[in-house]
Length: 617
Ligand SMILES: [Zn+2]
Image (tube, rainbow, N blue to C red; front, side):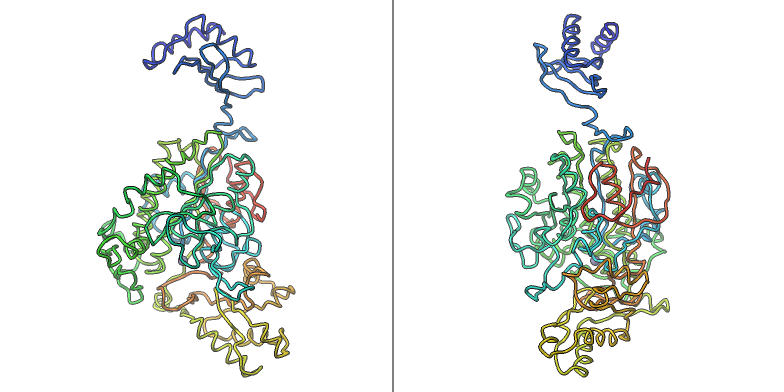
């Protein structure tokens, strides 16, 4: 031992900073004795900042510790090295940070379609060096943003987590309820418009982050997204959600999460960084020939919205003369929304020192990149705008990964990638490819259904509302007229079954009494339908048919049980935990279950995923 210490002291004497100095022989002896008293031995010793430090000493429990002693050789700090890097069964360290990436509205086909145009250390890191599942699907039929984000880190299906759509009808009030609204809570330092997302109240389950916080009480769980329903779903019950505000262009939060903003947030927004992209425009990143695989811009169906125009270069000012609401909103519908997100993400990583948790606990940073969904809505996933946006997002990921590598070392980060839903092609584009495609107008569908029911049961508004993807029946009216509930439901089903663009219709009675057909589609509907919260008649559109609140709002949308909407990326990177390779079948709910397993925490309480053990090191 003495020989080791002497040689260590010699090494230290040749390479320490001015403030440090090698230990004298006497100090080494005393420090060694003090170490022994703690039941430890070995380690690298030095005198630094007025105290003696011993790195990587092995103690009686067989674990490695860092110990600090004051100048009188009294112990002042003992920290487990294993805890710092995390220790787990099978000798696996815990990640210091789980970087949970979600790209809003990103079908699997788009992830692989532009592979050759990705940079070496962005999405390719996940595809080439990580484990990814090519046949990963949502199991529920309702592929909307709120639903998907509530599923992603909870590994629960909507019939359990309760977020059955972006909106639904509140059974108590009969009025629209937005999935993450909660009138008890308000945004900090700015107005809270009606139906704004402020808390996870409507999400009935826990997430991996909640279970991690439950397990150690120290982990930081932060979710950042363009949309409130995205960050709130990812933050779960006990994480912190930041969401983009189109009022001020800032990533804000509500008093559900905190009383006031942290200093780093105030410092970041002191310089109004949200204004720095004003008057820029969006042009193609690569030479025009690189976009042959996508449709040319300015198609007849392109959504003319937010003053973005139909072709490159797209101005992003939203028609505003100075940075204002119109600009803060418009820019999120372009790749500049991702740049704005990246700026805030870096500020949060630094401000919260994510991945360097002083308790040695893993942190979770979940980010949902919203702009991809918006670009797909405006232009379609087959568009060159979508291709360009994806390639630009790849560059942003590369920058983020390099940044984390520098800060905390990428070997300490578990990176995952998924999406809240996929996307359909623009119906008119599908028609041009001679597919059966079209648009359903929910208002017309309600009127036609009411007309059919009125003809049979007497004049009345039997169907009161439609929120994706269900119709709501007025059971009070049905009762007051002494009509048979089952007969009315069946009559609605019979009528809607033959409605243009409709594939299948299911009724409340069918679902409550287990009278569903033994098909995959029926199972997708059952997993998506919550007995207490959902509507009464579920309408499933045919493939390539657009079904959303207003048929003309967007060029394209999502929300269906078809594979273009359910098949989304599932990729994981982190050689400490993940075996690189291309894997086949998985469900989205398997991702959070696997992360909980890697973190050695309880599965979220509604979790139904399996551990993707074949992809684990
Ligand atoms: Zn969307």
